[in-house]
Length: 112
Image (cartoon, rainbow, N blue to C red; front, side, top):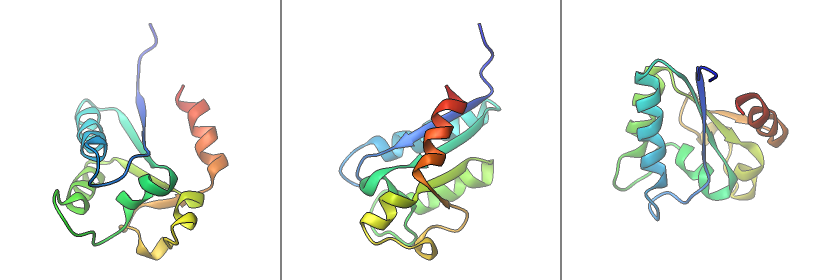
């Protein structure tokens, strides 16, 4: 069996209308604590909202994302999804990188 050293997590669901965002952050935290390299991709118009800075509401997603980042989890945001809802790079939580769709496609291959 191949040893797993890295994990790609994809978030595509709406913040505040699903448990997926919190589950994704919990999984990222869990895998990172196991010593794995973790990449979270915020995908599609609804997924990219998680990366927007200064969101209101509960849970406090911005804080949870920063905690994951401090542990070494990387976050990437789909540029196409962001553009569909008018989200600009400067509106993202510091440290989240905007990437093109083809880069996400390449990650799927790399992490498979």
